[in-house]
Length: 327
Picture 1 (cartoon, rainbow, N blue to C red):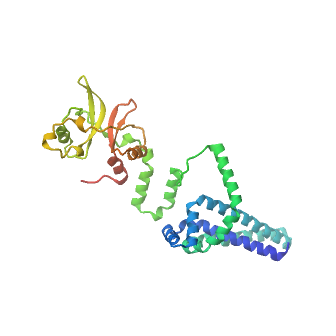
Picture 2: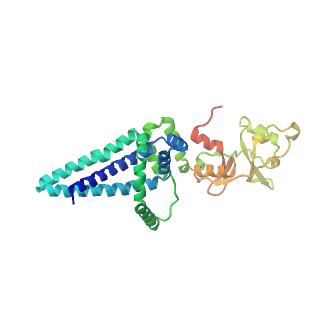
Picture 3: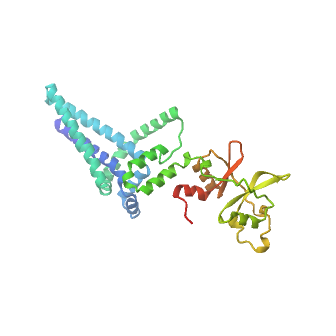
């Protein structure tokens, strides 16, 4: 092969490797707010970067395939060139090792460092070359992407897509970025991620086993018994032949607090709200999501024998994450 053609091809591959390595590190360091603002202003490069950010998996496949092809071609050309000009084995392998160190320093480490230091300007500047590489490698990327998904489904079954991955991965990412987070932010994130591991029974308020209001209890008695907890949600019990049996609903004290004096003797059954029941082993996160979807503020917690053991409100779950307010 013509040496000038070999040198040109090698230089082109090294340039592609330089840009792709830098973009791989710099893309996720860019200011998303600035990119979005520039895109809305009509900047085509910013719009292209935004598309890469919206489809990171497609972009990373392009980087992987492009870097692999460019590196293989560059290494092959360097190997042939050194083999032609260095006959002695020791000189050949020594030169090859030096070329490897040179390649890593200037076409792997250097571009990643530069793009991390100046992500916005460099990613915008090289968005066009990356777009060309992306279009050229599109068929290969689609083939490999589809093949990898097929293999994954065969061996692991279909998985639910998530932009964040597993909770363990999020914990790892949080530890990796700990320097950019304050102590309060780290505690808050860790508490949110731990919600699913905490059973709801650990934060319930035990049901009062001494006094159990029933359907005939006047609301004035509910308010009096609530005392200082005027935001309380009281479970109401049914009676069967004088014996209290099960929770049939709840009354929110706030709904009866400001009734007219003539209505304070109305029974609790007039203000009864349906109760939502949950097993005590259910994770706090699952219960919170269910309360959000149904618009409820409370859930009655059951033990393994389906007996009522406590009540949990949305406020108590939020207090677990953000801390309880001091009155």
